[in-house]
Length: 606
Image (tube, rainbow, N blue to C red; front, side, top):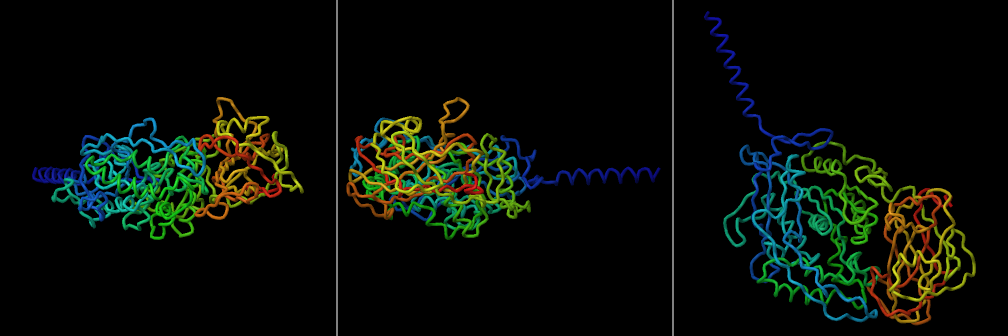
């Protein structure tokens, strides 16, 4: 009997111990195959802790004599409070969270005027602020909080409840996310109110931060990384604008981003200026009506100190964060050169980097499993081999799904070789394009007329408004990978002219199953007045020939057998350039004009 009682007591004690151990088992991130997994303890939105605060920066851009504070929100699992759990951060910052200006008539610059002239003053719409507390945005939360991350958002300077002024690429737009990351690491102060003194501490943060976002929201992670801030371990920018000159200009030419004809940097400023209404007049006077007005230069389109200060390539020296870049080859808004120039520089600096390209338009993040592995490795410290992968380029091939990219050793494809193409006469019909140079070709002339779209010109059998040179039909698929280059030897009958170049795949397919952009291999634009330098233009002497050399947008495309590659040279591009009065004549010297294509395998394919 005594033995039985002892056994029952022992069993009861063991049961209590198991219950106690179970109760003490704390929720934590779980990893499988190198990726953070969804954890049941983190999946209930009603249990997430959501709050906001204001992080003090190191600058005052609204002129009130006080350091600007950024509005920040936080979403975290409740275990960060109840169990003392510390987690890494995925951080998303934007100027768009609190609303944007309405699309009213006259908000864009009028493009119908001669080159070198200024259009009439445009309309400046006001933003009706939508910012609320405590939640700035719900972006990324449902994806990453259940996988063991804290998600943080902030409104960029002069937007929403964040103080200061938007500068569209100015230093404060780099220093603002830096301040937030400093606060997450205990190096900056956060407050419960925009002007209060009650502090907020990020005691639940491990200090390791990853940033991601698309378009302007993808620019801000790069901006933060260029400060060299400790704690920012990895960035995944998607279609980022890495240079406002390359966004609003092209090789000296005033050139709009696709879909926004007449937009310029001051238009974007008005579009995002959703901050404190009482500070807007000061900000407008200082930033838009002085700094931007004096620096943007819609007269010449030249590169200057104003634009250099808004080019993140110039600021990359302190950068330490790993980077997975993402972009679409048919993004004619933020064009694919934006990502490639940064990726190339990051490789030269020895940073851990990779690039994901797809065949679609603006936006398009890498597959979730790819992003997961990058965040898991750099934020949770899981050894999943990301940094040791031999392949650094991941390209979604034509017809493939976004989540199934093809892996390559690098971009451009290391097997790509430059192949030079030469022109033979044929205007106003089609001329030839081949790897064999024919001596003593004629000169051919086109007449500018912006009223014809590039697509219409490429499809036209006969027209005086473009010159079009085509290869023979391809006998097998041709893989282009890299940045095409062109030199056009031309003369103008006027002191200024637009120069536009499209590389197209013909015949043009009007079928509903094929996107229009499938026929556009790549494009480029240039100002012949800048034939010497981006920062110095000079009027053209009518009749004098100039060599204008520039790069087209980078691409990686497989052109199918049976197609022809066409080089189209024309003047004003209806969708992108200014629209001067029709009639300017450009004469092209075919002997001095050539196209260089990066072809995988090389000239033997022809």
